[in-house]
View 1 (cartoon, helix red, strand yellow):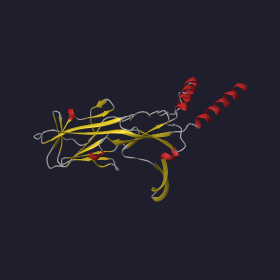
View 2 (tube, helix red, strand yellow; view 1 turned 90 degrees about the horizontal axis):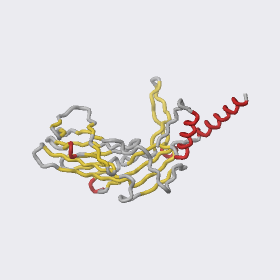
View 3 (spheres, one colour; view 1 turned 90 degrees about the vertical axis):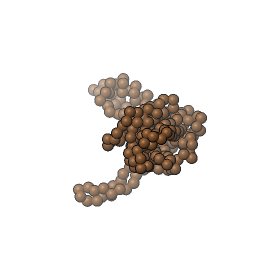
View 4 (cartoon, helix red, strand yellow; view 1 turned 120 degrees about the horizontal axis):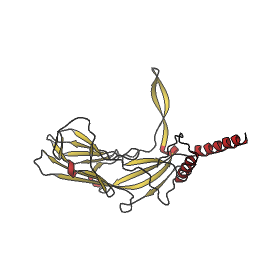
Amino acid sequence: MKKSFIGLLTLIVAMSFTSCVKTYYQVSTTKAVNPGQFASVKDGYVYEDSNVKIMLDMWDENGKSTFVLENKTDKNVYLNWEKSSISLNDTTYALNDLTNYNVQRLSNYLLIPAHKNRKFSSYDIVDSIYRIEGLKEKVRRSESMSFDANKSPLTLGYQITYCIDQQQGEQTINLDFYVAQITNYATKSFYKKEKVNKIVNGKVKTVKNYVYAVSPKNGFFVAYTPIKNDIWLRKWYSAKGKKYYKFEIKQ
């Protein structure tokens, strides 16, 4: 009886501690190395020349290196597949074609018909938060740290090479960015409630919905728990063999 009581008490204390573990969010905001290249930044980076338009929106969990390449001309545009890539710091990645409809691909070139577009991507930009000395992980609302291009923890680059009708010379576009600010948010500062109309059983009802309080198109976020809680949880559940426990720790 005494052992059962002690075991129950231990479980209650452990669950109480675990319930105190909160999720926080780290937002990384980027800047362009050459801001004058872009026609717009507010709704995502938009680059344009006389032939093509390139649109980038990084906002997502772990970030997305997705961009849309639009052919503005009345002729065919050919993307040179082998001379186009995405780089994260010192690592270069090939592009993935995310377009759903089929268009012709010739040797190293990918056809983009007149006034059509294709969507490309590589990998998630990050898979963990940046743990930086002087930047608190457990915050009440939010805390930030800024960086210049030389001291940024992450650089992101796009190299896009294309030609018109395979008759004109190739043109290469280099778009380079760096993380200029990192902000750690408490959940109550990262999300906000708003009222939305929803149809329930054929009737319109007003309900509360959680939306992002911050969502920069030139930034991305990672959910995390402070590292002290992370280490404690891993040790405690490993020792107790609580394999059935579905608590997910995001870093």
